[in-house]
Image 1: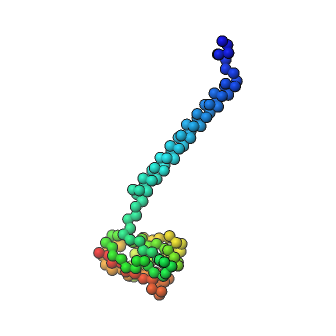
Image 2: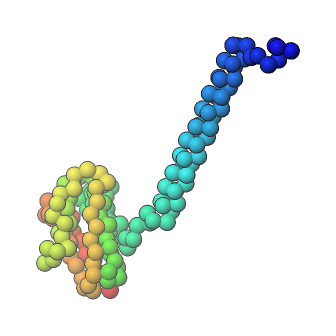
Image 3: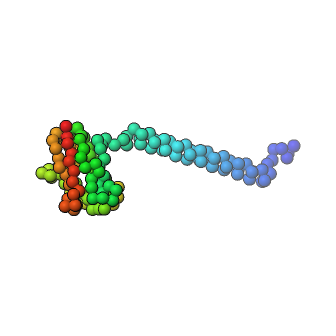
Length: 143
């Protein structure tokens, strides 16, 4: 009978390890649940908040040529044009007679971009400062 009420040191160690493992499992469950929630929030944010509001993408140096592609577009007043550097840098965007719309900073790395919002109706001629002489020009028609 005394054996039933007294625990051996071996049993105490087993119980202690069992409690330790249960605590570790609870901790891991919490970590996994926390990471799942973070991934879910990121996914939802990407789906609902990250949609760009650009009217059109214009590639600079498209296909390894000194061109804007497309080089003539029509958009609505208030639309944003997203200019993306592809190849043959450096590139920039100069809108003739409109320093406020020009982006004189040179883009060197592929994927670098600049956005220009065209608030007023009209026709806007634009070019790449370093490559205008090579024919890197375009027109934006804003309705």
